Length: 201
Ligand code: SF4
Ligand code: SF4
Image (tube, rainbow, N blue to C red):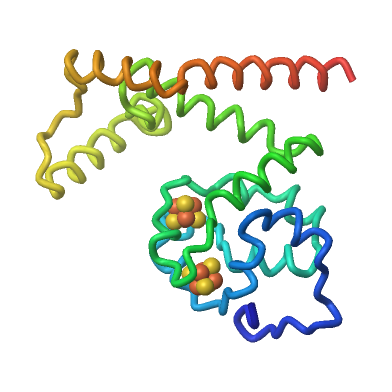
């Protein structure tokens, strides 16, 4: 890794301590990162938020542990793996983000955002849609409905969104067999316990 915008990463500032723990098995690969930006260019999280993997890894390399782990940005990644296919070195960015999230939770950061993410999982189990139009519509139902309809028509989809009962049955089997439902239950339990502990603190 060499630069981030105009900022050169000088060897005096480099810190291996945090970097090694974050990089894990990808350690050697990450050293090859030459800030080409391919992982950011097509990243859906970067398009819709302040998330930028290059900046995160730059701060990691500088040993900015507290700054990185307390940031909201590490929770913005969708884990879509798009970046990994784009990266010339096939750096395991989503795995690195997962590792950062685990480290953040151990420090008590990010539990509120984890609760939101577990809600996305719950939506999927209950309705077959990870982002429920009902939730989106809470902000401004009429505007949301209009925008969703326009988007769907532009994409050549039917006007109304619906998950057929056959698709729901198949989804239930997939979620059960892959262990998703079980893991989600554990996650919800952990979030509840953490909230209870912090309320009593
Ligand atoms: S695509 Fe790979 S090499 Fe390029 S900036 Fe992203 S992580 Fe680094
Ligand atoms: S896995 Fe995360 S970082 Fe990679 S493209 Fe998807 S949202 Fe962006």
